[in-house]
Length: 345
Image 1 (cartoon, one colour):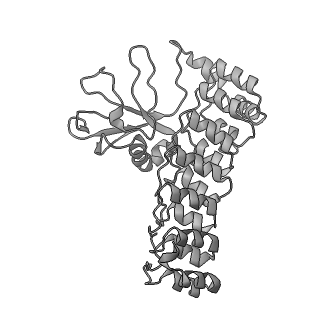
Image 2 (image 1 turned 180 degrees about the horizontal axis):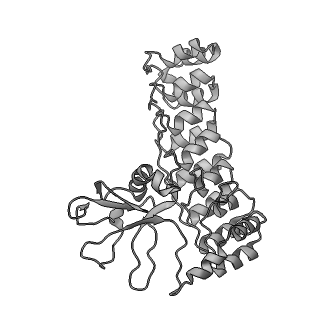
């Protein structure tokens, strides 16, 4: 459990975070996002909890109302906790459908959630049979589960389909969590971006999904958009919805680095318009311009130079972008970088 005072989340001695089946101790300020705390717990409890990315914090049931799960991108301090104990607390539990009925027959639900029924439900989703999907949900089926074969969940499967807006809405109204992850650790928002499905992405954002949901590597949908390219409108949609820029992977690469690595010019333009830092360096000290020079992405290099990128920044091998281009054998691009003047901006 998590105890809470006006300044920090504390128990009588330390903050206690209760992960399913075990207790661990740590300290977290109220300004911490729910995802950050969950991630720190799930990493340390993976051997105990199994599919820990499908766990989240939520207040306990109170006054006849079920406790809902906290949104991953909201601060802990934004949630009023029910005064049912001297020290209010949060529960850390598996993400499941929150049933609004006053009475739920657990035995009936268990019969409903057989392997055969779940497989049949996934087939209805794949066929975009909205009517049958809705009927199963009305019976009480929980759409937050992993397909035994693919590892997908109903919502991540739905966003891969064309014209699936109504299906997505039915799943959401039937209890599907927007931040529920596949077995591989990605959300429906990530999957929509990877499939370049801007219509599904718009629907998810309109339903309240955060553009900053993170996958198992801590990467956002915007990061994936810059990396996979195609459908620049997906990138623009996320940025319009105030997606954070500057997320880094384990090698210090940001979105702007990935866009230049793969020559995604339109994505680069969107990132720069919304404030991406052209001078940011990855773990090797390479800027976006260095990566253009290394991978011979002349179109992205021209955009960066035109926007005022500093071509004199050196990486941790003491090389400028011009020198990197020469070493990589990209002589035409090296010449473009060499003759560029600040007055050309």
